[in-house]
Length: 280
Image (tube, rainbow, N blue to C red):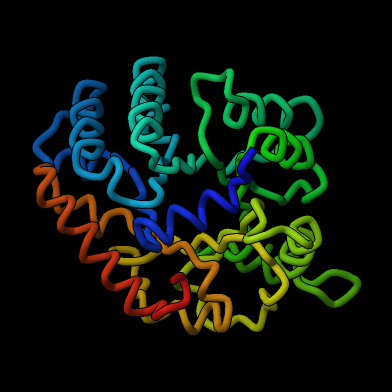
């Protein structure tokens, strides 16, 4: 069974270093001339699948924008996941789950077990109940060739109070998370399946990412203020592991699939230019 890390490396080599966030928030539905309803959500997803399936390496649906429509929204999410996966587009579900014991194991089953209707290639997770509490997620991901991206350094200003706080050993909370994921990825080839989320807008923080040996998801590009050129500042010599993520910058070009596709191609060109030959 191929690992998520290996599949991600192959997808980025084949389609380029780009993740497109699927974030159908109310203002975006309105911009597209769609109702803020399950029907509008379904039409939005149909257009994004038509435009992007089989054309980008990774898509990242934000689960909350589907869940707000209840069971109908979740059914649309399930369908959207299936359609992207059938085109061999990797699906990273942005759920930021984090819990302990049987509950985190249930989250792992929901998203990382092939028997689930919400089965995806990878998810985002919160480590702030302790990285060790996520062990059932890591185990389920490993058993089925999946991945987990753990929050480390997020772009929101509120995150600094927790992520930059220092423990008794002098390390920041973020560095402790980085170091634990680095250990778990040790020896993996060509890349580990446990990644980190590091915002494209965090700037130079002094954190050491050199031993992560896993993918580095960089959200916040485009409409959220980050530029592809900022990636070198944030990630230094780890650019080859970076997966840049755009959402509104691409989605605001809709609803026409041709326009969405063109926006994704522009974002990819920016990423290629910023990363140079790092992902070749």
